[in-house]
Amino acid sequence: MPKTRKPRKMARKAIAAEAKAANALAPRRKPQAKVVDAVGQLGDQPELRTVSGLVIATGLLTANRRLVRAGVRMLLAHEIATLAKNLIKRRIDRTRPHSARSHSDRVVKPGRHTAKTMTSFPSGHSAGSVAVARAFGREYPQHQAPAVAAAAVVAALQVPRLNHFPTDVAAGIALGVASEAAADLVMRLGERLEEAATPEAPPRPPPRA
Image 1 (cartoon, rainbow, N blue to C red):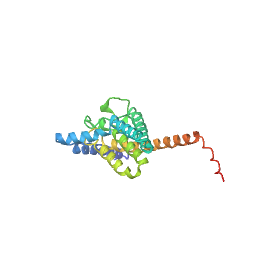
Image 2: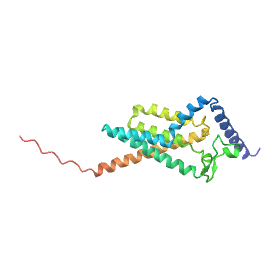
Image 3: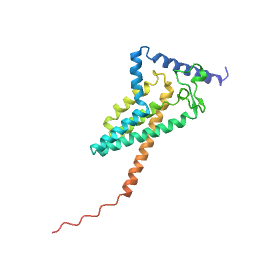
Image 4: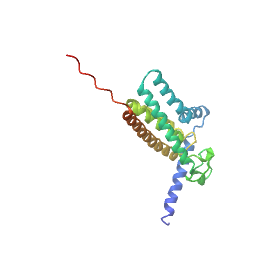
């Protein structure tokens, strides 16, 4: 067998295997499907923006600057992740598991389709959830582990929902991590600029003898 055929055959088997895994994990009963769908939907854009906004609002109402920063970080990381995944989706075609019927549908390939069923790669729910969770953990490291764990659950549920293949989710998680890192750089730069623009307080006069 020529060397070029072996990698192609292995790739074909891998794609078929993840399609089978997605179908095998899909819940068969309606109550289970509703729970999976409800939890998985928490990674959608409106939900994540709402959570970020509530964190900011709570921080403002309680005069908690740290909480406000956490919310701003969450919102910024989410928007960067959303922008990045949209840029990729506009250049990559992959049919979602619930609609894919052939090997060609399941392959990640260059394309310009904008229909929702054709934009499986990468998982935006995974990217947004991970970015928001890590952003919150920047300000509250003691809560980073449970936040990231919750985001991982939301990301993983995209597979049994048949919205994404496992590789879509993996790519989304990586994109979320990178987006949050970019958001952190922006936040640090903003803080430095703010410090540089803030005039130093005049020295206090020495106390009278």
